[in-house]
Image (cartoon, rainbow, N blue to C red):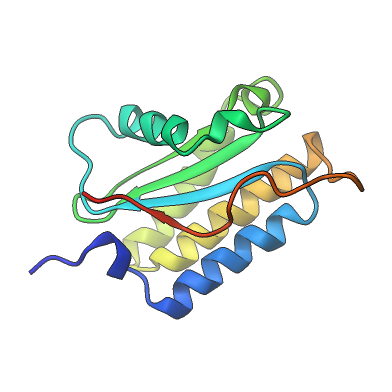
Length: 148
């Protein structure tokens, strides 16, 4: 029997991932989300883009949302950033983070890989989208789970 997306991480790991999101967002107006599904049929970037829009990630004031997408059964993942981010980060930014994640994933350290990606994304967002005193948390910090 295959594990479902919502059971892939323990409740403690889910809390660690959420805490990493909250910590990373302390220094930036950017928004970071993690979405986990059991299966991704088709192209992972197409699916991640669909979920990105479905979760309202394009509705941030500065268009500076980042979503880390993970399909656990077929081991696909992607990082999607909104257009405000793509206008300012280096072209290889997402590739660099994905490579670091993959190294940890290969060792079975999925939680560590997600936390690393969240932390690295937050550091980059801080450079271009620093936190301001009137900043609000525009999107939930909880992990979202697909039904697939």
